[in-house]
Amino acid sequence: MIEQDDFDIHTRLHTIVRGEDEAAMVESVGLALVKLPDVLNRLKPDIMIVHGDRFDALALATSAALMNIRILHIEGGEVSGTIDDSIRHAITKLAHYHVCCTRSAEQHLIAMCEDHDRILLAGCPSYDKLLSARNKDYMSIIRMWLGSKEMVRVMRKKGIEHHPNFRAVKHVPFDQFIQLVAHAGCMIGNSSCGVREVGAFGTPVINLGTRQTGRETGENVLHVRDADTQDKILHALHLQFGKQYPCSKIYGDGNAVPRILKFLKSIDLKEPLQKKFCFPPVKDSISQDIDHILETQSALAVDLGGTNLRVAIVSMKGEIVKKYTQLNPKTYEDRLELILKMCIEAASEAVNVNCRILGVGISTGGRVNPREGIVLHSTKLIQEWSSVDLRTPISDALHLPVWVDNDGNCAALAERKFGHGKGIENFVTLITGTGIGGGIVHQHELIHGSSFCAAELGHIVVSLDGPECLCGSQGCIEAYASGIALQREAKKLHDEDLLLVEGMSMKKEEVVSAAHLIQAAKLGNTKADSILRTAGTALGLGVVNILHTMNPSLVILSGVLASHYVNAVKDVINQQALSSVKTVDVVVSNLADPALLGAASLVLDYTTRRIY
Image 1 (tube, rainbow, N blue to C red):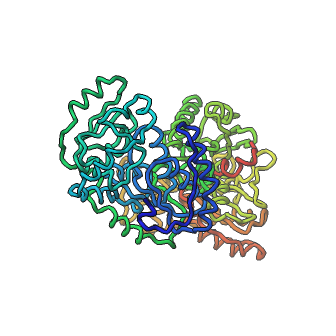
Image 2 (image 1 turned 30 degrees about the horizontal axis):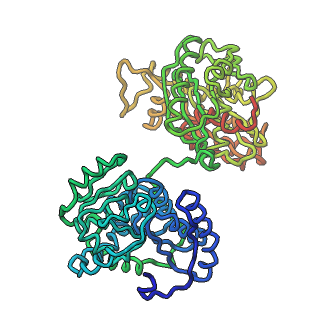
């Protein structure tokens, strides 16, 4: 038939192994795979057109795909029974372009993750001939095939060939076959032709068995799924024989070939050959990607303040992903219970926000043994914290490593990892808040001291007869420049009616604070301004002592009062410091929450070191 259509035949391949069992099919595919590479190397086709779902088509598609030849598959996406389904879908996965016959087949291809832009709904090419074949002379064709004596084996065994009403043949040319089908009283069997092409003529069909299960069919097809008795087939014949059904155009409208030719011409042979699948959106599995792991590594940070207890999920980049705040309980038992409750809640939430918790870092006031995770002595702001082991109960409950350190040291760690201290070998951080604290980084490492009392910068004495400090001494920086010290002086002024100036007002029940003193100074209260200048000078003298002792290259002022003190500190350094240390940089921290970030740094900096 190919020769009759005047095609130039380049190569003839004999690949069909004799036999009608499964092994013969496998051997035929194997033989084709052996012979095809040489043929394709010589032909070097731009596009390989593969049709249908036969096993020999699978061999051709496999060879072309492995040899990087573009494949256009015709009649993919359909559904039927037996092994044909698997072969058809396998060819679909190998093919780069698809021509399908029905809307359902198109949807199946899309559901199989094929690129919609490479799918053409053209209809069945055979329908182009079928829909124009009905009116041709058919009687001569029927008479010719009534004289055939070739019978299939089953019919021969049954002796059917001796019956005048039966004819068995191995092959009928397509043009003649469609005339026989178009004018038949009924077609019976399990061929796809019965459920596809025959619908173009409305010829009755009896489809036997399950081979074509799932195929779209017209109303002319009657299925006998379980054809194990003659009665079912006879009943079906009585129902179907001689009927005339409407023409079905499920598989095409007669214009498939022009559409396919246009589609072929539109293919850009320069576009990348690598096939892409259009998978539905899914969450990428990137947990083993190093960038993802580094981005999602996080810490639980705990800030144990005098008033509030805060817990936060902090990312490796210093982003506070989630923060929880509760009033700090008064007793040890309640405080520890609340810490555990908040940490457990935060650890659970970390899963939802895609954070991998590496450990827990705790920032607290007072003297801390970071090696053991024990609060040795706390400040008067946090009662009952004396020789308290924070690490063990929290680590046991959360099954995570736990680090504990002084809040001043944590502030320095926060600056080293996220702030102005990043990359600086030697620097000092001073916290100016309710109290005065700080941390010292020397040669990139935090200094704790022999008894974990290093960097108690708030208790540097700057005057022998200064005001009394909470530590019991006199003239400490904290006694001059802390929030508590400023509040004390503000209350004295207020009691003497010397605090409020024009533009200020206070409610009767309102507590006097350091903020009122600062406001009064800004509005021209000379006594308030004098107190602030004295506090700034005291802090500046403390910084000069630090410069003469540690010789850092950077001083970072942190806390709510830092911006009010920075200029005063710089002035004292210029007036009092040795010329060799006057070049030090003094800056205000740009970190929004150094306590939490410092607690997180305990974890994020030291996790890989395994230092407890």
